[in-house]
Every structure is written in structure tokens, then in C-alpha cells.
Image 1 (cartoon, helix red, strand yellow):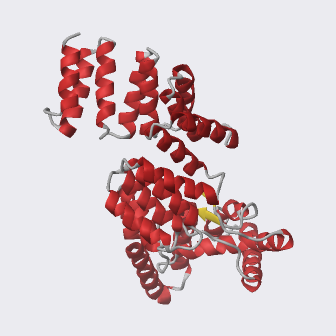
Image 2 (tube, one colour; image 1 turned 180 degrees about the vertical axis):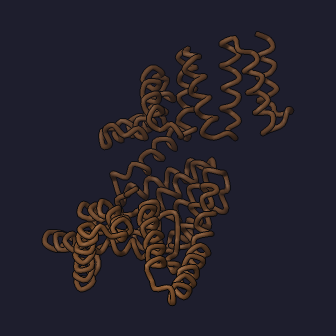
Image 3 (tube, one colour; image 1 turned 180 degrees about the horizontal axis):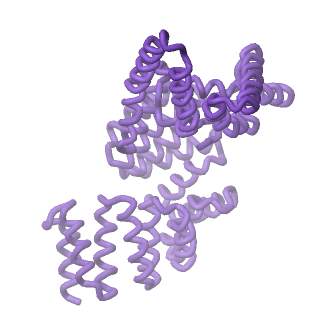
Length: 393
């Protein structure tokens, strides 16, 4: 629900003061998202501590809420549950701002406060005098309609990953994470030109230079341009030597360029800098595989793939290492994980077909071949060659 942000707070006393201001302000800043005027997105904006006057006002409002809840409990009032649901679920969220004054929160943090607001509306409508009930009900209905209209687009954005990230970027066009998220998604889908346009947008955003270089390196690598990927990754590392993403792309680009010794050295250095990071282990495993250090490659790739289950490329690399070591069963599992993560991954479907055939599952192999055929057509040379090889066994 909570994701740490990158907002700089400063040091020493200023950090302490910011953290003292943070929790109450955070709670009420997020309650404001229950308004129809809020720019609803699947992720709330990065939040930082308010100015001191607003912080004191928020603490005062929180104190009044606490008193109101205690009074409602003592009187066994029907307002108890609405008041508790409205603010109490946000207290852990607000407490997170004590750890990091810049933080991101998913809108699901507002589910219980929204229920509290709905109960408060119903309680208010039921408690007013009969002569005013129609007016109050009309105003509440108008509020609900406005809220529904405002939230419709945000709800629709959850239909797929692209719509979700695009919605965040529309609501927060100056958010580097949202803009680079769109670029990353599009480059992963092979939509290189569209990804390049989003990367160009990110160039103009403050504080995103290293992230843009890393994203450019990733996009170039995916587009089959390892030299460009290496240049961008090394430029990012020159500014941020510990950037894990740039380091991973650098190692993989070196492998693609045939500079295996440099890739192995870079991978081992990456693992020392990021001990236990599966992405670092996966990149090093690819370098070891290129260096024909197959057992080491398989072990590293297996450990990384067991953590990064949705990484189709990593699963594919594990499958190749497993085939090289003669472990056909592990290879089949890895290739099946790759196609589960990326159903359009033709080479992985061919790997599934090959390993199933080797393990005696000819029917399963045929199913995998049919899936590959549906993507590239029956005349694809890779498909024709594999069918002939399986048929000749």
C-alpha cells in the first residue's frame, strides 16, 4: 500500500521538524481525495509535509476528531462507526510518513474512509428534521453523482496495465515515475517509437536524469541496439555508480556485444555492490552462461528466477542454462514460466515444445507448437525446423 518516495527532506533538525509535521497533515491530505474534485489515479501523488500553519491546523482537526470519537462512544451514538472509519484507517498510512516524508499511497488506502463517508452521509440524511430531509438528500445525491463521474475514468483505467499507467501519467504529467513507467511498458511491448516519445517527455522533468538514462538503456537493449544500451547505461553509472538497473543493462549489453570477460567482471562487481539482489544475480548468470560457466550460471539464474517470477527474459535465460547442463525438466519449467509471464514469447513456446518432446510429452509439444504457430504462422523457419527435429526423434 505504501511505497517510499524520493523527496529530499534535508538533514538534521529540518528533517525532524518535517517529520513532526507529517502524520496529521498526511491523513487529511488523503481524506481530500474523497472529494469529486480530486484527480483520481491508481496511485496517489507523492506527498510531503505541509507548511507549519497547515500542520498545526491538521493536528488540531485530528484532536477534535479524537474528542468526537470518544464522546460518540460514551453516548453510544450512531456517529461512532462513521467517525472511526473516516479517519482511523489512515492513521497507519500517516504514521508511515514518520519514516519517510515523501511517500506514495495507493488509493485502496481510502476504501474504509470512503465507507465511513458513505455511512456519515446516510446518518446525516436520517438525522435531519423531516422538513429539511429532502433538501439534504438531494445535496447528498448530487455529491454521490459527482463523485461517481469523477471516479469513472480512474476505475476504467484498471482494465489493463497500459491504461492504469497512462492514467497516472495523465493526472500527474510531471511525475517521472509515471512517465518512465509508460516508456518502460511500451518498450517491453516492442513499441519503440512510442516509448521514445515518452522518454523525450521525461527528459524535461526535474530530478529524472539518471532514471531517464537507465530507461533509455533498457529500451535500446530491448530494441536490439546493445551499443546504444551500453552507452546510456555507462552514462547513468557515471552519475550514479550504484544504480542497479543501469548496471544490469551494462552487463547484458556487454554479453550481447561479445565482450564476455568484461561482462563477467561487471556482473561480479554488481553482485558485490548489491548482495542478494536477484537482478544482479540474473545478469551475472547470463554473463557466466556466455563464458561457458554453465553450472554457476544455472544456479544464479535459478535463484533469481525463483524471486522474479514475472521476468520472462530471466526465465528464458534459465531455460537455456538448464538445457546446456542437461537438465531438461528444469528447462521445461523455466520455459513454461516464461510463456506464462509473456504469452507472445515465441522462442519460449518453442523451448516448451522442445523440452516437452524430449521428456516424451508429444501431445504437450504439439500444443506448444500450435501456440507458436498462432503467433508467427506455420511457415516460420524456426517452427518448421523444430517440427522436423521433433518428428525425426
